Amino acid sequence: MSAISILNFNSSRFTLTGFPGLEVDYLWLSIPFASIYAMVFLGNCMVLHVIRTEPSLHQPMFYFLAMLALTDLCVGLSTVHTVLGILWGVIQEISLDSCIAQSYFIHGLSFMESSVLLTMAFDRYIAICNPLRYSSILTNDKIMKIGVAILCRSSMLIPPVIIRLKFLNYCHPHILSHSFCLHQDLIRMACSDIRFNSIYGLALVISNLLLDAVLIIISYIMILHAVLAIASREERIKSLQTCVSHICAVLVFYIPIIGLTMVHRFGRHLSPWVHVLMGNVYTTGS
Image (cartoon, rainbow, N blue to C red; front, side):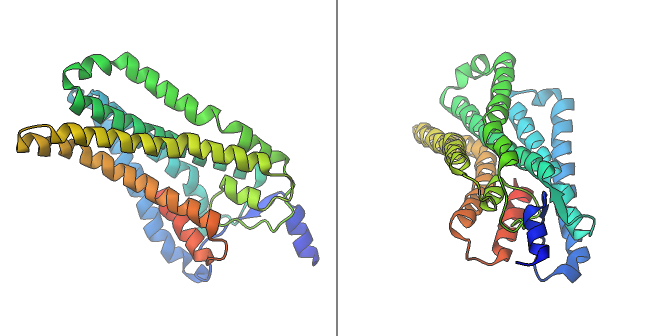
């Protein structure tokens, strides 16, 4: 083994992966990526500003939309410095501590977004299936408690598996699959016992992302059953239209994250391009 490889294995720094084979075009590639991030930031900030300043939007549905916009904004902020840093030639490596911190925010915000989408499905279920009690069920006090519960669920369950990354021995090449850090990427490079990280990480995915997805599907089955019971065709269409934007948000969130999970789980033989593409679709689409 060469001296460079030994140094790479023992180093506490990790190499970020951009777009293999397109290094000479990084400056041009940075233009669409910077534009997408700018649109995401400005769009979410505009949503938050309008909801905050428009009294008619001070309703449960728009409060949850504000939570979703804030989460999307934070996801972008957690990855923009490494994604654009690579394309602009500012950074090529990241320290272990920074990598662990970034993975904490990315995974925590993913769980938070999933929780918000579940809450929005619950909101639509009450609005359509029990409209007369809507305002009495989703009061401002209850919305605040829901927000605190989402924050605690997303931030307090992850530390055990993330903190343990600090104490693993990384003996495999320190080359990440993406231009940002993920838990599954780090444990792939470890030669220590990773059974706790694997089992606990899988339990988190099942108890958060998978459970939320199942509950969202159940809520929409119940919504569809209630809508089909409405006699008026116009009322049925009107009720379903209120759910369209939320269904789109659910698809935009879950399709990339399922794809990214499948690539990490079963696509080790795939081209690095696939890993990079799925990772960037996930972070810019969330």
